[in-house]
Each structure stands twice: as C-alpha cells, then as structure tokens.
Length: 470
Ligand code: ATP
Ligand code: MG
Ligand code: MG
Ligand code: MG
Image 1 (cartoon, rainbow, N blue to C red):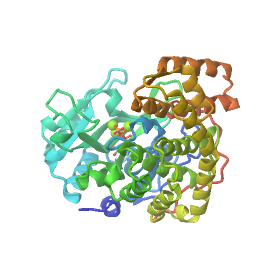
Image 2 (spheres, protein in one colour):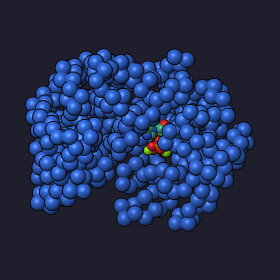
Image 3 (cartoon, rainbow, N blue to C red):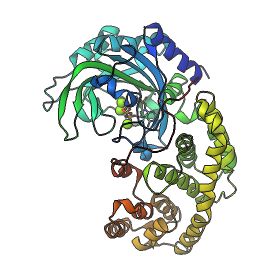
C-alpha cells in the first residue's frame, strides 16, 4: 500500500485542524431527536441544528470522521464503490466561509496533501433550477478553474445529481460541487464535454467537496432559505483509500481486504466475488448496528440486521458452504473497527453472540427452503411460479434475488410478475403496519423500509450519543 487508511484519517484531520477547524467527536449511528432518519447517513446529519441556527456550534469551522449507514445503497453493493456502511471524513463551515474557500481547501488537500495528479480529477457543479430560482453555479466552476481544473473536467449537472440533502425528510440542503477520480480507460467511456459522464464505474466520486447549505426543506416539501449560509463536505474513507492506492474497488483497501481474505478462505472457492463482497459489506453494517445493542427484530431498526444476517446466511447456503465460519469473519470486522471505536472492543462478545443467535435460529428454516427450492428446480427447464417463489420468501426467508439467481444458474427462471402480484395480495391482507408480520413475510426491500419506518418513535435503547474515537 502506498498510503494506509490510518494515514488518510490523520492527514485529513490534521489538514483541517491546521486550517483552524475544531475536531469534534463523531455521533452514534442512531440518530437522537431526529425521527425522520433511520440511521445517521452523513457527517452533517447529527449537526443539523448548527445549520438551522437552533444551536450554536463550538466553533464556526469543524471537522471529524463519522460512521454512516445507507441502506438505500443496498442494491449497489457489489460494485466498485458502494457500501451500506462507510466512514465519512467531514469538514464544515457554519456561517463563515463559503464556496471559493471550500473549493480551495479541497483542492489543496487532494493535490498537495494526497498528491493526486490534477489531471485525474473531474468536478461537478450545479446547473441551476427554476424551482428554487438558482442560476448555474458559475462561482464554483470559476473557483475550480482558477486552481487549474480545465473547463473540460468541469461537469454541470441537474438537481437530481448536484443538489444535496436533506439528510432524512426535512432539514438543511443546497447545491453542491463534487470531486471524481478518473480510474482510466479500462473502466469505461471517457468523458467528453457535453457527453455522458460515467459515474457508475469509471469516474468514482470521492468527495462532496461542498454542499452549499442555504435552504431548509420542510415537511410539506417546500424550501425556505436558511438564516445563514454554510458549507458541508464529506469524503468516503474507503473510496479515498481505494483511489489513492490505485485499487480496483473498496474491497481491496486495508479496511476491507482482511475481511475479504477471511471470507475467501471460508468460502473454499464456492462463493462468487459478488457474494463475497456482499457478505463483507453486510457483516460490517450488521456489526455497527449490533454494537449499539440493537437486537434483530421484525420491525424498527432491528429489521435491518435481521435482513442482512439472513442474506449472508442464504448466500452461503446457496453456495453450499454450510460450515462457513461467520465468527472468524466477524472477528476481523470487529478488530478493524476496535482500533478506532472503543465501544466495539467493549461489545465484541455481544455482537458475536447476537449475530450467531440470529443466524443459527434461521439456519434450519433457510436450509429447508433451499431443499424445497431444489425440488422445484429439479427438471431441465422450468419456471418457478409466483406462488412458489412467494412461499420461499415468506415462509423460508430466502431473498427473492437469490431465488432468481439460483433458477438462472440452473437454466430456469422465476415468474417475477406473478410473484409481485402475490406479494401485493399478501400486503393488502396484512395491511396493518404495526403488526410487523406482513413486512417480515412479504420481503419488503430495504429501500422501501426507510420510508416505512420514517415515523418510528424515538429509539428507546440506551446507546451512545457520541462514540469515543481514537
Ligand atoms: P454516490 O453518487 O456515489 O452514490 P453520493 O453522491 O450519494 O455518492 P454523498 O451523499 O455526496 O454521496 O456523500 C459524500 C461522500 O461519501 C461521497 O462523495 C463518497 O465518497 C462517500 N459515499 C457516499 N455513499 C457511499 C457509499 N454507499 N459507500 C461508500 N462511500 C460512500
Ligand atoms: Mg448515493
Ligand atoms: Mg453522487
Ligand atoms: Mg455526492
């Protein structure tokens, strides 16, 4: 490795501390006083009150490293750079400096601090929108140009891409400018001015180098100007470690490689690369949630670890690696985080026991499910009916995407339209959202769950408000 993730943490924090930013503790991934958010999904989420003026920050300019969970990215997991949990390197300026300085700081850190050749950098800026009466963000574009980023590397993008926030349903938000790293021709089409900008694979977003906070989004969907303007930035530690070392994906970084190696060892060659990536990701996220004392359950936040654990167990059973040793992988995950978050060390036993309880509890049911699946797919070409698929999902807990994969590998398919109908029928029968039963059986995907859970009551768990970070 050219540079370790630990060095990246230090360089980032030192840089901003030297620029008079106060290093503040990170928060628990469980939001306090924010019922609109399932998990902390960005560095700014626990700091909303500073942007709205409801609370006074200890210093106008701040920085820290914040663990984040984004179940919304679950379907991307397995690609080069999306994880359901990651650490965000964040810096903020509350009612102090704005666009030009934020951009200059980002550029200085990337090019001088991390020594990224500037030809490798592409940036996006907001193209403006009528709804909010915002014109194209030429100010940011000019700031980048002044520093030596050529026009051909500056991409104007619409609201969907370059207007950030809020974190949750309501709160501070604004146009942003983001930095992408070009991972080269072997990863996709080169960007030409006005053409397609491939951010799915070739150009990896490393830093939202400035959300220019100037609006508050309200519950009714309207936007009101904030009392003052602020800057919010966030860079993914895993992604920075990936690109600074010229690696193919976040899974080869020192943050995930030891976990991947252990999974590969346990897999004995039976798991696909994608399956191994999913397990690595899901075990990290599960550990973070369990480290808070949250128990797997059929509703509320506990539903997330339940789904993630089951997916991991199902992946190993599908590949017929029944003796897969999850504990040894969890030990790697916990070891990784224990270096920085003291509560992982303290709760190690609890994380492992809770995980194993949950997994073994469902193991036999899942196994029976796979037996049933095998019977249905026994013939040469076949179609799994919607009803059969639904039973496998609802009674046996096999994720639908794994049933599809399984069928395809054997030369068959699932009647997915029929399955969806079956799913809808069932949902209508068990509509009562408080029953919980419908969710579990119905296999609502995690993306929808963030919406489903938006009005869950404040968490009752006596967890951590801030983590002790080293
Ligand atoms: P993407 O477009 O790649 O999904 P994003 O625009 O949603 O990223 P932001 O909300 O701007 O991401 O978050 C700031 C930074 O956090 C990103 O620039 C990236 O470095 C990191 N990041 C965001 N989502 C993920 C993820 N799912 N896994 C790893 N890092 C992430
Ligand atoms: Mg995203
Ligand atoms: Mg983005
Ligand atoms: Mg972004």
